[in-house]
Image (cartoon, rainbow, N blue to C red; front, side, top):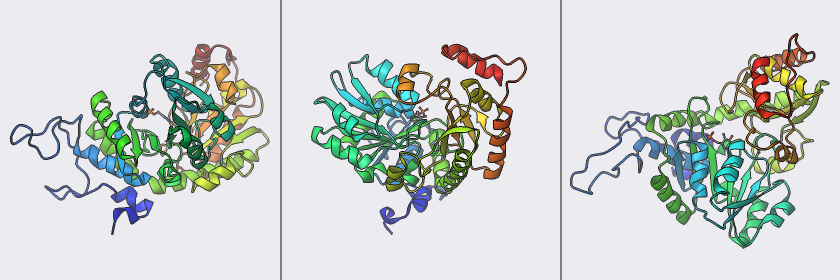
Length: 411
Ligand SMILES: *Cc1c(COP(=O)(O)O)cnc(C)c1O
């Protein structure tokens, strides 16, 4: 049976995994070693130093490649380390076309790190092929998509974007963190590189930070592999082990995340106290058709704005009990996040609003608890958020720092 013929739930468990050759241990051991003996100078069994390679990491990289249907996987110390390594392919004078609605840290990396090094970029509404097309310049080297996006859950037509990028030979990068390979495989849609924050669904248990890049392109892989070693932002063996443990259950977890998120999105969409729900699984969502075509499920992230003002939405975020108020997403437990003051605070308010991200928006990472318990929690929080509590400080909308402080105090 060729590993490539296996279906994804099987690959999640078996891709890149072999029983340990010395003991037969079924789980990949955590090779806690920095170096490896050599029988003569330069002669070793494939590993010489753990920045360059470690067997636990090799197993994870092969597993991630298998899941994305790619030839090569590389893992990194964080999602941003993976992004930063990828951006090292570029230099002064190069240009990137990026989706406007991306993870806040991605925006910060472009704006506050790579722009200073002479890499320019244009942000676009990546659901619009016209905007992508018009933004591509002669020096455009990358088209950067995040689909579904964070936190508005918009979806870009990956195949169409690949066609648009072809004439300029720009690489199409897809941040597949929200979809995971269970729901969407960008390489099969023509993307050049798939990026992950494995911190999220792939790890799946909120206990590890990591990132990954997967590609089918030999030359790109060679350059990225070189950069991984040359710049050194590699994960440790224990982190690799934790992600490998996570990916084994990815398929079943994603089924439950999708099922729960759909139940919650539908419940909220029909709720009189709810202004707007963002979930690509809802038929009236502008990204529904694209999502349906290129994904096999709609994912576990739902964003919502309750009716009423900013303060009411803020009270809502402070009133949930099962949904913990925290950054991050993709773990088995449900989380609620206020992008404007938390994950996306590094994006200026005008830029956030230009992209349609209002200060009232709350992002839910729907976990795999019983959906009914989650609904009951949201219900009590919606009710409790209706009226101000005694002594509540009305937050200062204009001041980001004050926002953060009052959000915590109000909780
Ligand atoms: C979290 C996240 C990242 C950054 O990953 P880290 O592991 O936190 O460095 C990148 N993209 C998306 C979509 C994310 O959610």
